[in-house]
Length: 102
Image (tube, rainbow, N blue to C red; front, side, top):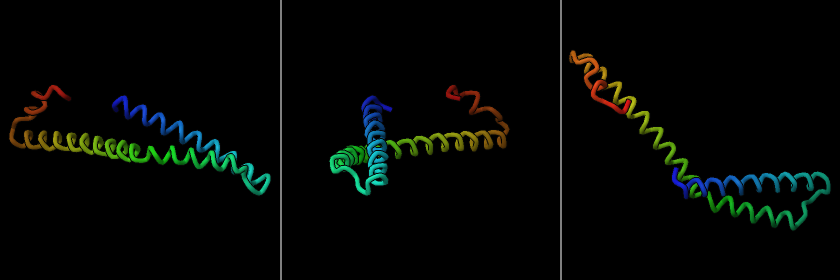
């Protein structure tokens, strides 16, 4: 993960934690008084906008993680297929012996 993505992720998580804290406070006020303080509601709306501003980055990071996992799985499957083919062709370990990435 690049430094910019790490910073964006940290900002997103900070905003989300602030949102949870403010929302919990709002819920307590609603339970206690029947309504929430308008200043708190405004604060919560601003925090929500900050969280939503990071949604695009969140989607990109989620997609990148899924693509990385898929690539790793495909690499493992490809190596297993090659090993089976080499075994059938009478060259067991031919690919694995030359592959220093394992």
